[in-house]
Amino acid sequence: MADDVFFSDADFDQYRSLIYNESGIHFTATNRAILESRLRERLRENKVATVKEYFSQLSRDKEELKSFLDSITTNLTRFFRNQAHFDCLEKHVIPELMNIKKNSGSTTIKIWSAGCSTGEEPYTIAMLLSEILPPPWKYDIVASDISLKCLMTAKEGLYNESKIVGIPDSYLKKYFDKVEGGYTVHQDIKSRIRFDYHNLKNDAGLRGLDLVFCRNVIIYFDEAAQANVINHFWESMSGKSFLFIGHSESLFGMDTQFEFIKTQWATLYRKWV
Image: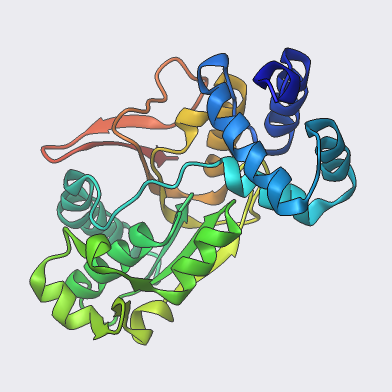
């Protein structure tokens, strides 16, 4: 069957409007081939003959809509991705937060890993904070993603040999067990992270966060959707808090109250009110 018959320009416009309205993800003509490929997979999986029939199914089947959105997201991640961010977290952000919070009587640092994919980012944060926070300091991490499949992998905490590249040997010995098929994260680290499904288009209902990681996610949104996500982050964060976004992402030109800061390790944003 020819591609123009399988997936016409009108079909493409209809699907990318649906994706944008449901998730904020912006598909352009340059990544149309990715969408076509994912659609073929979903049609085979659902035994549906045409994209028009499948679109009709999506309008009435919310679970399949979730599976479809899951299929079109990119889930590239790894442990200690962009080491400079974690150096900045250890040497600048955490000391700042401890200094701020000691005056409030709180000894818990609240963190959100938004767009956590298969869990490498929140587990990295958890291991690092377990290393550097002195008693009685604690941390609480919420990790979310729009991909249910990725969240299942994250909750299981089992990673094959190729996935553990970049983890320091001392961390691997201390926070993982060698098992058949790879390495599994220790239960005491797993228990400190709550994995949850969330669509960044919506308010997660989180409040009082000290730190938000949302790296290499908003790059897939257009300006309006980016602004919506960043505003949700602002509302979720405490008066003195920090935001990490991807090194190729920026809030420049956006109507936001976040303050850009540059440290000797990395750049990031802070809410300081």
